[in-house]
Structure formats: C-alpha cells, structure tokens
Image (cartoon, rainbow, N blue to C red; front, side, top):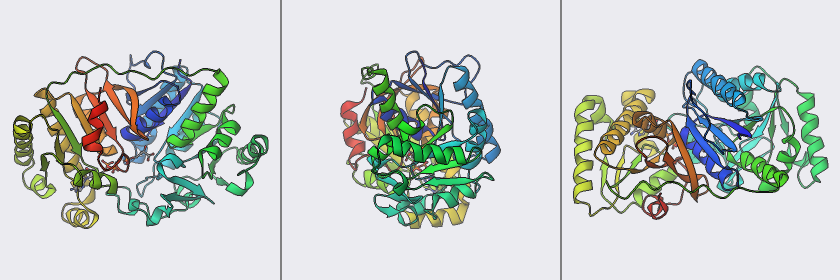
Length: 426
Ligand SMILES: Nc1ncnc2c1ncn2[C@@H]1O[C@H](COP(=O)(O)OP(=O)(O)O)[C@@H](O)[C@H]1O
Ligand SMILES: O=C(O)[C@@H](O)C(=O)COP(=O)(O)O
C-alpha cells in the first residue's frame, strides 16, 4: 500500500529517490507519467513515485502535470505527498519549483515544508544557503548547467522569486543539536506561523534530516525536497512500523544484444565518467544535427551498430556531451533550447534503434536525456532495485520488452560507473 506519494520533476530524480527510499526497506516504484486512465501503483510499493519531465517545461504544463500526478497518488491511497525537486534546486529562469509547490500544497494542508539537503551526495543547507560538496551552489559546477544554471545559493531568495507566497526558513541554530522534541517544536512553530507559505529547512547531516522527519511525519503539509529528506521519512516509517521489507530483486533481462551508454548530461561528473570510459565511443555533434538531423542520426546509429558488432561484447558509449566552454559556443550558434532538443532527440533515436536490434541493457546519463530516452522507448513504469552508488539504482522496465535501465543523474555515480555498473546489472 502506497504510504508516500512522490511527484518528481525528472526521471533520474525519481529513480534517485526510489533507490534511496528502497534501500531503507520501503519498496519503491516509478511510474513515468503523467498517469493515464487504468494506471495503478505497483503492488506492494510503500512509495510510489510519478516521474514527470516538468523541471524545464513551461510553468503551466509543469503545474498541470504535477496536480494530475498528485491527485492520482492521493486517489490511490497515498497518505503523504512529496514534491521531489533537485538536490541542487535546479530551476529555469521561469522557475517551476514554486508554482508546483503552491499547487500541490493546495491539494494537501496548504503549506509546504522541505529541504533539498542530501548529505549522502554532499548537498547541505545552512542559513538557507545551498552548498554542493562544501562549495556554495553558485560556485559549484551547477553554475554551468546547460538548461538550469544556478547562480544564486540563497534558497529563500530563489524560491521567493518563484511564488507569491511567503517563504520562511528554519535555520540550523533553532533546531540543530537539540532534542527531538525541541527540534520538532521549532519546525512546527514555523509551519504554524506560515499556514499558507513554504518553509525551507536547514540540514547539514542525516541526523538533522531525521529530526525534521520526526517533526513532519504526522502532519498534513506538503513535503518537499530531494532524496535526503525522503530517506529520513522512510527511516521513520520503518522505525514506527517495526519492520522493513526485503530488497526488491529485479527480474533478469538476459545477456543478449550488447550494452549501451547514452550520455546527454554535460555535468562535471558525467564528463569524468565519459573520460574514464575505456570502450568504443561515438560522439554526436549538435552542429551536424543542426545541419541535417536525419543524416547525423543515421550515421550515429550505424557507428554504434558497427561498434557493438566488433567490440567483443564491450559496452558502447554514445554522447553529445561538451565541456562548459564548448557548450556555450554551441548554444550561441543554435540556441539553448534548440541545441538541447537536438541532442535529446538524437540520443532518444539511437536508443530506439539499438533496442530494435536487441540491446536490453542501457545506462542513460542525464535527467532530461533520460526523460527523452524513456519516452522514445515507450517505458511507462520501472521497478527499482539496489543502488550501484548513492542515488543510482538499476531498474527494470515493466512491460512486454523488459529493459535494464540505469537512469543516472548527471552529477551522480563514481568516475568509473560506465564500466563498473554492469557487474550488478539485472
Ligand atoms: N552538445 C550539446 N549542446 C547543447 N546541449 C546539449 C548538448 N549535449 C547535451 N545537451 C543538453 O544538455 C541537457 C543536459 O541535461 P540533463 O540530461 O538533465 O543532464 P543533467 O542530469 O546533467 O542535468 C540536455 O537537455 C541535453 O540535451
Ligand atoms: O536530487 C538530485 O540531485 C537528483 O535526484 C536530480 O534530480 C538530478 O537531476 P539531473 O542531474 O538533471 O539528473
């Protein structure tokens, strides 16, 4: 029975959260939404995540899809709603986190409380400022993101610019190091004082997130954040229920057909993973796609097929990724949105082509990229298994053609992920 219903703004974020929650003993499943008539949560899932592609969508679409997903989750028994956004608060200039929070809060208690802090992957929030591996967000590689460059680390200000509702902060000194009861008082007082607003929570450690989950577990407000707070809520759920479920074992997809890595992420970690990849690789240039998309995609598909045939079973990497300087030049030539669309469409087309030839195991790097690839493959639901690294679980698609998919957030996973993750593939 679904206890936590999650509306996630991208596919890799959904898998991150489901993997992390699953590792606490709460089985989690991901529906790639918005939900359609006849969709049902997977049986036995304590946490059902609806993955949207709403992070960079127009605001009205993001709100409409999120409300549909939230209603569906509540209609299917979810006791709490959770808005999953990025641990680095990734937002376009228009900013979808605020409007979606406003709309989802209206479905629940009218107020939201949450934090992107996820110490397991180096994201902490202090005095409302977001740090990534100890650097302010604005000084981290996120300032160079292709679609959502983050240049302001002050989350109260960033969220405040996205919503007409008040945004309040629970700063660390008001709860940090306190007893569970005192910390809960500090959080609940803030939530009571702002009954129509959004409350952001500082958090430096998982212990801080456990204090927040104790304060928020029984309320009716909209919860929000990244996988850190969701995991703390799941730990609390398991503690109160007194038992954890066994890890989900994923069905085998077989070993035939070869293995492919599709990397559309330009994030620093993905670029390290590309640089460390020892196998054959095919690079697709956005300039070529802009000149003649069909020809460039056909050439890429042929190159991948040849590499799969002659590569002794080694995985093949296909990528459009660029470093920040080159990326800016491509964006200047073709426009930010158009170049992103060309890259996503190309990798999605390559994914369809290789699956048509029998490939059943794929790693996809990048949230937007994973959204495009799973849409092209017609994947509607994935079962989530063990994590290869924090926030990086293998999944298997539900449906007649089972695919093993590792849908990886751009900045996640160790540098050798593209060659080592296969050892534990379903
Ligand atoms: N060569 C390129 N030029 C312009 N945009 C690109 C290029 N390669 C990839 N992109 C775009 O960059 C974006 C990366 O976002 P995403 O896939 O979400 O990765 P991440 O998880 O790192 O945020 C995608 O929209 C992708 O299509
Ligand atoms: O919270 C996170 O950092 C991730 O779950 C996430 O959302 C990452 O987004 P992408 O880097 O766009 O995959």
